[in-house]
Image (cartoon, rainbow, N blue to C red):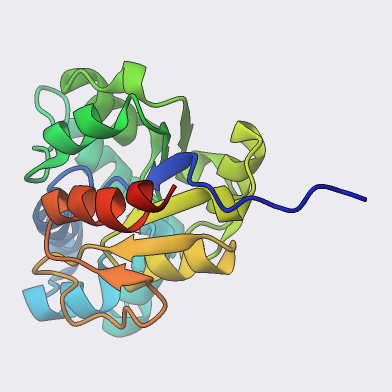
Length: 227
């Protein structure tokens, strides 16, 4: 007889944009920089509703369809890639409030990974410039999968690389697209909405919390204290 599965929490998988780093406002500005030569722009409300949390190629396709642009989604995604790389040349996206303390608290308790729709160079920039690279054993970015969030492939790859079962992992996300990706891969997921994602549907999250500090408290109370 095989041993019963354990639902003990062994690892946390965190999103990058909007969860680890405060980058979505910058991404909105960079998309408008890319669209300016076409005479198009995205309002803050449109970005919140239709673009936040999705990969650049999907955002590019959305912009082409919405504005009838004489460009391909791939063209726009590549232009956004170049704009982001230039933006990060001598800076890093700032950490979200409470992230440094949360990671310090979790590092001795859980295995940690990053699962993101961002490109690898952007994630590595954040981890290296904020001195966090040593704390994460796995990073899955948009460069690692054919389809990223809300597709669950990124989370499934992280589970494979870390040799973990979904019931032993908790994800932390800031958008509905991320929550959908995590839960479709069988993970429980904490949602921490930002101002840009506050109107998203988080019904698939196991809990919706206001901050990273509250996620630390929730995990201590609801998970660790129960063994």
